[in-house]
Amino acid sequence: MYNLLKGKRGIITGALDANSIAWKVAEKAHEEGATFVLTNAPIAMRMGEINTLAEKTGSQIVPADATNVDELTNLFTQSQEILGGKIDFVLHSIGMSVNIRKKIPYTESNYDYFMKGIDVSAMSFHKMLAVAKKLDAIAEGGSVVALTYMAAQRTYPFYTDMADIKAMLESIARSFGYHYGVEKKVRINTVSQSPTKTTAGTGIKGFGDFYDFANSIAPLGNADAESCADYCVTLFSDLTRMVTMQNLFHDGGYSSTGVSDDVMKRLGIGNEGE
Image (cartoon, rainbow, N blue to C red):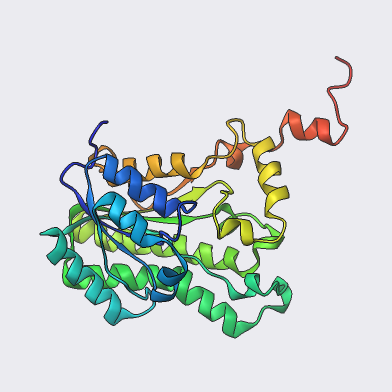
């Protein structure tokens, strides 16, 4: 145990169940000495098992709809009271697409659903940061991390409107990262994670096949939720105090690999002449 987060206070969103990345981040942050508040939308909390995580990590829960500024204001206010000071780190692990849930093709997107996805999955990040800044709730040198996916840079047909939404999320991290960095030295980054076997991820059509494909491309294989938690903890820590406004790929090398020998062999294309 390194105690990278000893004495640090945080807010972790999106811990639905033991398969979620946010859940793993909470467990790892607890192991590394942090104290934190857990939060999720009330409806998600009814569906999930967040009370189990709270008991395991000795954390309190403050329900909040991340699309609601008043509820976010209450979240940051109460969290400082519960934790006894300003917040050192925040994890934004919030994503939802009604178009994906209803299997609506990208070219036929329902725009009301699209706007809902933007509000929940990207605009919530801006609202969260704006509320924190207004309240001066994040300590100088604090760290904010949001989870994203490479569909923001490359096209994955099955990811439909979430690809556009994640691109917006990453842009918010850069734009807000500048302003918050200049004024309070607060770091804001996104982590672009491998396909991960979470409850949300496995709900995407064709996820299993794509998971196997990405695993066969990445030299190190797909990064799992536990290793993503490790990475997030380093970004919360003082070891990365000069890293901000970055989209950081955590994918076993997938994003830098054009094609692998494994995929070539599956396609029946060998190294002819050898």
